Image (cartoon, rainbow over the protein chains, first blue to last red):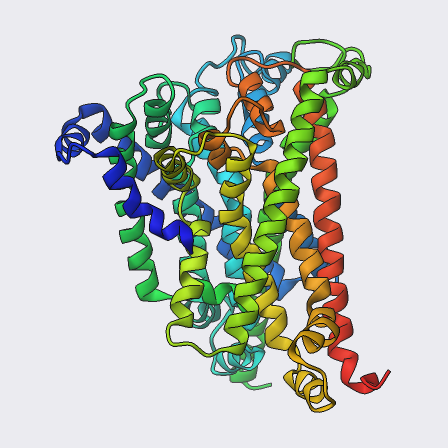
Amino acid sequence: MFVFSLWDVRDYRIFHAWTPSQYQQTIGSNLWRVLLGRTLMTALIVASIATAIGLPLAWFVSRRLNRAKALALVLLLLPLWVSFLLRAYSWKVILGDQGILNTFLIRIGVISHPLNALLYSRTAVVIALLYVSIPFVFAPIFVAFERIPNDLLWASRDLGGNGLRTFVHVAIPLALPGIVTGFAFSFVLSVGDFVTPTLVGGTSGTMVGALIVSQFGLAFDWPLGAAMALVLLVIVLVFLGLVRRFVRVEATFQQ
Amino acid sequence: MSELAQRQSAERRVWRVRAASSHIALGLLALVVFVFLYAPLLVTALYSFNDSTAMAWPIHKFSTRWYHQLFSDSQLWSSVEHSFVVAVAAVAISLVFGAGTAIVLDRVKVVGSGAIAALLLLPFVIPGVLTGLALALFFYWIGIPFSLATVALGHVTFITPVMYFLVASRLARTDRSLERASMDLGGNHLRTFWHVTLPNIRMALIAAALLGITLSLDEVIITYFLIGTSRTLPMEIWTRIRFGFTPEINAVFTLVVTASILTAIAAGLVWFGTGRRRSRLPANAGG
């Protein structure tokens, strides 16, 4: 709760000059616009792919598995508690120039030179963020599917709907809050991440998170960093506001 | 056999084939996801026993030299110590905040309790960069120097929601008549809380504390903004892997992951184990 009050505090400490120049500088900056565009695109791509994977996966675990269900559930949720740093770092190791994938591919003769494009690219960032996102997307969708009464699905079958039609016309609309929540988790997670892009993205994969952080480290321009952060915050809040029009996010946590 | 019946049985066969093929497709997808999620972890664990400094394939010689090196790395151990200090402090404070709010909101139906719950959730859904930055500026403004204490306070912001939701959902399932019975039998508020309410949510508190500790031990983003001169373990790792890598890190990660997975499993067992027992409670509530 008290955190919330801090959002205002930020303005009058750092902007003692009370000028909008930081915002002008932020919005006018080419670098910022490029990075913001890239960040939002990357986050949207990651969230979309994660949802596209999480949706059928959650359906499979929720409705098709019986005995293996608990095990599958534990295996899918366990990575949530695995070191966040490690999850980005391990991709650096796998995709690196002298990394496992490159040396392996050379070994089996698929390629003759290491593929530089693997690491330090947007693709690497998308893969690593996807890796972090999938459990976050899976969880709320799974919960949503679990709550659908079997009767509704049987009714659809009885009325002649096949598996796919039941899934598309009955299951998905009923699970929509969970799906939207999962998408939102993944999006927000990806937008603000600076660790993953820094580790696996290189310069071509940098995102706004890293830019904001650099204002506090190397550049030492706190007010500018704060202005950037505030713009990002507004974007995230608008996004969450849109999401909340669909669902109550906190309902996902309640039983 | 009529034409209709024939057509129906043919349709049914097609339907069954489709169902089976969708089952196989979904199963394959699940398999791919499992490999995707676990291969990197296994690779890291495997390479922590790699004798060479190059992370190349195949591994020529296995050894435990990185683990030996790790155990004599005093800088690393002091960062582990800092991490635990932060985790314990953050969890203790969050426990009071989160559980306190959950209990109060469960009892008192204030106007806007939904808004309070949403507000509590906010630090959980807002990117860590923003929370970290806002806190850093706040501490700077009121003149508190960055140290492990500010890191612990930063961690409180995202552990408190976890505490709140776990305790609130457990409270929603407990039977309030037990408390009323205690009050009727002459227990005052404090005694009722201590002997009735607390035992009811004890396991939820333990599970939440365990999860809070794993979350705190792992946090980098908020920590990054609030850290002083003494580093926590993830910050120590972060500074080391940021430019290039040392094979020692593989060994550190292997140990950290093993520990956090075991803690998460323990928390899960506590949570689900007691959840199941509670549902059977009414039968032998007298004991």
